[in-house]
Image 1 (cartoon, rainbow, N blue to C red):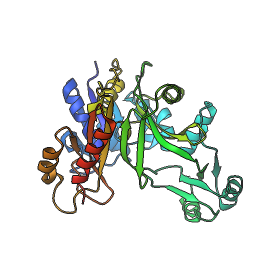
Image 2 (tube, rainbow, N blue to C red):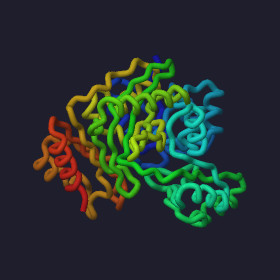
Image 3 (cartoon, rainbow, N blue to C red):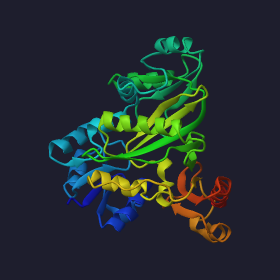
Image 4 (tube, rainbow, N blue to C red):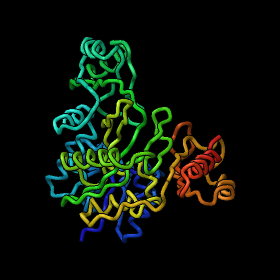
Length: 378
C-alpha cells in the first residue's frame, strides 16, 4: 500500500493533516513555501511550488501528491501525471478550483444551479450585464481570489477598470467573471470526499457565517436543514465530485436564496474552513478522510458526534503576546472548548486558529465557542 503522502503548501490545512497522518501511521511530508510555516512539523523541503524542478524533486520522495492550496500551475501538475506520479486531485479536476470562469462553465454544462453569470472582457460588456440585472452585480477575478479578495460589488461599468487594465497588461488575454447579486438568506457549505475508485462520503450540510469576506463561524448541521435542503445540497456536491472527477476533499460553498433556491457559489478541492468542525464533531474528520481518499482507502463514517457543533475562527489574535498566553483564561472559563492554533503570528483579520464546542444545546455551544474565541482577540 502507498503510505507516503506529499502535501504541497505549508499552511494550516497541511498542519491539521499531520495528527490524522500520525494516527494512521502514514508518512506525511510537506513542501512549504517558507521556513516556519504552520505545517513546519512535517516540512521536509522549502521551495517555490511554481518552480518545476522544486516540485518534481519533492514528488520523487512521496507516493501521492496532494495540496494545501490550489495554486500549483497546470503545466507542472500535468508533467507530474505524465511521469506517473499519483496526483489527487488531478489537474483536470483542479482546473475548476483554479479558474472561476471555467468552473462556472463546467457547472452550467452539468446542469447544476448557479447564479446568472457572464464572461466579460471590457467595461462595455460589463455594462450590458449590469443593465440586465438592475445595475448591481458581483465581479470576480477568474484566478487567485479567496477570503473576499478578488471580489467586488459593482453598480457601474467602470468600477473594475483597473482589473481590465491588469488583464490587458498581462499580455495573455483573459476576462473577468460577472454574476448576479444573489439575494440570499444564508450561506451553506457541503463537504464530500471521493476516492479515485469512486466511493463518496458526504457530511451534513453546514451553515457558514462570513465576516468581511472571511469565514468566521460554522454551525453543523445547518439549522433547519433536514429533509429537502440537506438532500439537495448533498446531491449537488455529489454531482459535482463525479462530474469533474474530484479526488480527496471537495467543499461546495452554496447560497440558500430568499426565493428558495440553492445555488453553487465556490469550490475548494482540499480540506476547507467549513469542515474544521469535523475534527471533534464527526466520526471521521475531513483531514483523515482526505488522506484516506488520496490513498484510495475505504472512507470513514461521517455521522456527527453531537447534535450540534459550532466552530468559531480566531481572527487576528491578541495585539501583544502569544496566543498561548490566553490558554489559562480560556481553559478555565470554557473547559468544553477545543482550541486549535496554527503557529501563526497574530495580525488583524488573519486566521490564526479556531475553537470548537459541541453539545445538545445549539445556543449554549455557540455562546461558549464565541466567548472562548473572543478571549484570544483584542
